[in-house]
Image 1 (cartoon, one colour):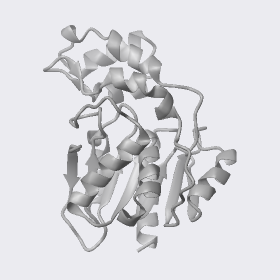
Image 2 (tube, rainbow, N blue to C red):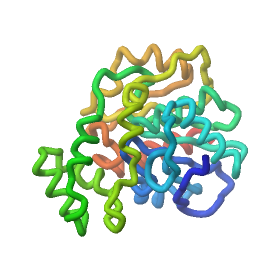
Image 3 (cartoon, helix red, strand yellow):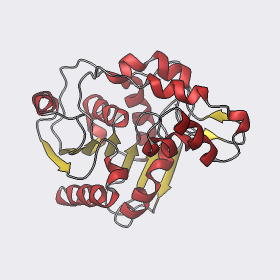
Length: 255
């Protein structure tokens, strides 16, 4: 599958950094951080399948997402650094486990390789309920989300995936809903990846808990852990400067 991407900067002597967004996100969510990090290395943010400008498909397993990444990465490079947030973090972990020879360093943002008991279908229902025919700008979408009690911090994030001209979502909501159980899980595997890995979480988030560390260490024995004290699950938007600085330190310390 040919994934859409947004490229920041030009090639350098350092490994490129490929950034993988979370559920309902897109490459455009990572524009500011991608631009800042590109002063040292090229940064490429991608749209996963069923998101953004990438193709839609009936399948949305982590094995499929990891293979999409493999096809994209090996078209241009032999080896990259990989950063993934939430669902994108699980896709990045699956890539590390299944396609280890193409990965130098791994950064996983606020997610663990475990099954979560909640789902995100309430947000799919909220997106479906918007009257897209009346929306001429994203602020109007935010107002409709507000009427449904959607957290203000998520309103703008969701509306970035709204194609106002086409009156449609750049998200395959039907397939994401159908695959929600597998999105919230993580495949069972006996593989492990022994390269440098940073598991960076928000101190105000409960996605990466102390009881998850044993499984993280089983799969990623060189894993290191860090927290941003003033951030939640959306740590790259809650504390973009702190997120950028921590990522930069890890990447440079592993050169």
